Every structure is written in C-alpha cells, then in structure tokens.
Amino acid sequence: MSTNRELLFKYRKEGISDAVIYFALEECNGFDHLLLSQNLDKDIKDENRFVDAMNHYINGEMIEYVFNKAYFLSKHFYVDNNVLIPRQETEQLVLNSAKLIREMFGDKPIKIADVCTGSGAIGISIADVFKNNKVVLTDISNEALSVAKKNGEGLNNVSYLQGDMLEPLIKNDEKLDVILCNPPYIEDIKTIDEKTWKQEPHLALIAMPCTLFYEKVLKDFRRIMNEKYLLAFEIGEDMEEALTKLVKQYCEDAEFYFEKDMYDKTRFLYIKSANSYTNN
Image 1 (cartoon, rainbow, N blue to C red):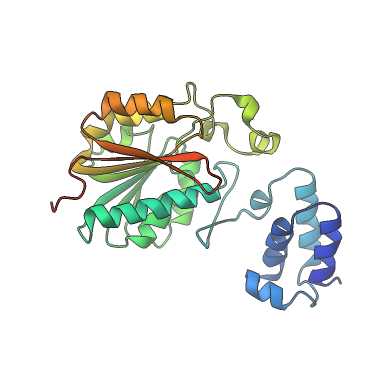
Image 2: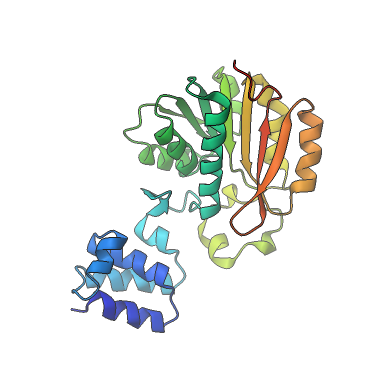
C-alpha cells in the first residue's frame, strides 16, 4: 500500500498536474482538500481505484468524467458525457449575476431561467443563493436535463423544461425577470482541443454562426420577460463586436456592457432594462 504523498510524487514525475492528482486522491480517500493535506503521509484508502482512475486520465479521459464529478463554486456536481464540465469562468458569471440581481431587485420575489443549463451548475447555484425565488432550468437535450435534475435534487424552488432555447418558456407562458445563458458559441471546430472534442457533447459546443443562439434569445426574450429585466450571457472572447450589433438591433432601449474574465478575456455580456434601478 502506498501513501498519498508517494502517489503524488510518482504521478507528478509523469507530468500530471497536482490539481488532477489531488482531485483523484481526494475522491479515493473520501477527503476534502484540507483533510487530504493533513493525511498525505498516510496510506491511501483505495489504491486500486486511484491507479485505475489515473490510467483512464493518462489515456485521455477527463478526470471529472472518470469520477462523474466536477466542482463549481465549492459544490460538487454530477457530470457525464451528456454535459459540459463547468468551467471557472462560468463561476464568475454566477457571482456577477447574483450581485446584479440583488442590486436590481433587492428582496422582491422574482423568477429566473437558466437557458442551455447542461449540468445545471449555473441555475442550481443561483437557486441555492436565492432560495425564495423560482428558477427554471431548460435544455434541448433530455439527457442533459436528466443530469441537471440529478444535481438539483432537494431544491424545491427549481423546475425543468425541455426544448430549444426560449421555446419551452414561451410554450409554458412563463414570465421572467432574469435569464442566465451560456449557449454554444464555438464556430471554428479547429479551435477546440482534442480532449474536449472527443468527450464533451458537440451539441453544447458548436454554433454556426457563433451568434446563432444569442440571436434566438434576443429576438424572443420580450415575449417572456417582465418590464424590468436582466439578461446575463457567457460569450466567446472575440464576439463583442458581433454581439454589440445584435443588442443594438433587438434591445434599443436597454443598457448593456461587457466584462472580462479572470484571464482578461471578454467573456460576459449583461443587458438590463432601462429602468434597472428604479423602485418597482
């Protein structure tokens, strides 16, 4: 039996990042990061599982899919090949949106939708923050929606609708105050790394043109939004010019701005009704 530290050094020498090794060690010990750090010199609880997981990773499988688990805002989410693995940049979208929601709506009960929800990481994280508000999660993929439902178990303020973009919300006569959306936006397949292309769902990655799904939302959002609204999107880093044209075309009376992510890349678009900060 090997100690956790011995396994850390062994696989570090093979060029595997500490983040991946620690992830696997934590899972195979049943530890959080702090507890693992305190037990590095103790024997691993399940070395066979750890070695098997590392072999899967070395052979190209993403570590989150190996364990069917991804961390997002300090919570774990079930993931499989039907959904994208949630990224750090998307955590920033949730945090920024939560701040805007508080500024715009205060304690007023509102309804929020997470469109293209995938694993549900965005919508479920928001529902966990705003427990008194209703949150609707939508996705065109039934398989993805099943993953979201698994992650949303126990949250009474979350519901689920299957369909393309805003269509299920329109059909359900929803009236919303906030839409959060991280849609597919990659137009050039050559820009996708091999691991992502082989393992993550193409349906959640590809858009031709890259603005396709943003335009679908912007064309129809007024059919389901209340007078005072917030739209928050994750976007591709080179889409600011194209999206500015779309916003000006469909949202003439709205305020909008872009924000950069932690890597200094333009990653978020926020659109707010002109009366965003009035008391209504």
